Amino acid sequence: MQRNILIIEDEKSIQNVLTAFLEDSGYKVTPANDGMEGIAAFHTAQYDLVLLDIMMPRLDGYTVCEMIRNESDTPVILLTALDDEESQMKGFDLLADDYIAKPFSMPLVLRRIEAVLRRTKNAEASGNILTYREIQLDTENYKVFVAGQEIVLTAREFEILRLFMENQGRVFTREQLLDIIWNYDYMGDDKIINTHIKNIRKKLGVECIETIRGVGYRIDKES
Image (cartoon, rainbow, N blue to C red; front, side, top):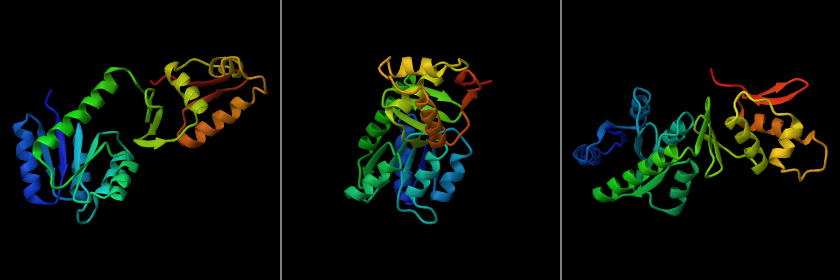
């Protein structure tokens, strides 16, 4: 299946070269001239990857990357003349998948695109990604995303959420959660589960873990 790439780049000469090279390499390409146009294009189609310049008028690439991450985990590669460490760290803090400094060679861009798409495909194929509504759980890298935004959970919180997502519809009592997550090593009050559930709900900011009064907790099956 032909992969679809969105290029958001205000320098027309670079945009044209990228478009021609990637189309010759078998990709379908949609170009956008600035951040505002890029976001509009992103909302009109499904893309496998976004090539995103940082220094653009109206809406810079950092802002565009943040907007994309707030609603999607579509891979993003930043293209920019800003090659200092601070600029690169800012891009990765916004969950960009890669960062290529200008000037760059087209074969290098192609290899980076292939590597990012390969990582994405492998993660999906290996079943490392659990999904429930807008929540995504990366079981290999111990990361949680809500609508594309990474949420930091403790190790215990992560394992509790993982257990629920792997067993949608099943009700777990507090005792069962202690036995499974703590592996029988916890000798204190089982109300610690209540605290962990409360923290997970607060951090995720979405309704997902349901209290079954007098029994325990569950994540309901998606309809």
